[in-house]
Image (tube, rainbow, N blue to C red; front, side, top):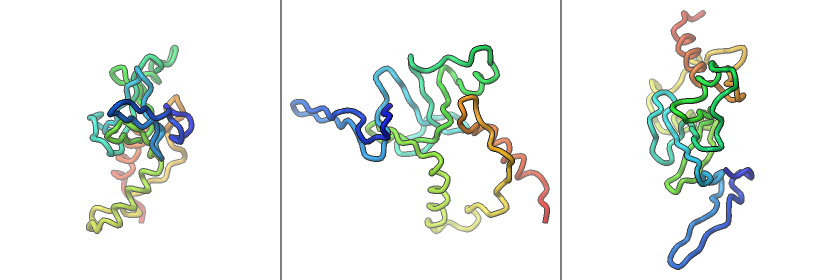
Length: 161
């Protein structure tokens, strides 16, 4: 992946009757050769279509196999050989990757409010759950599974008036 935030991923390639862009504004670039990336549903791990935000998972020779002596941490970040990054991202139809987290939450709420949806579909202020700290994976990224568990338990708990 490009380390410069998509400003200059690689040079464009031009050949007879062929053009391949090397970068796209606002994207971090395309995966390196031999590295596979997927955008999946964070809960089901089902692949998502292009331009749909979801969990970024990565597989390739440069990806770690796990944490030495920490099977518990390894089990949290590896799934069928794929490394679960904890990043919310999207990929366009040409394979350019954009990291959208944490802005994706604000974008979703903004779009939902502006889409003319019924109030039933919009989160209420009492649907926010206070936590002392956000759970993190061994990588330092958000543990989305643990956050989901906290949310489910928090919303099921009786509310104080």
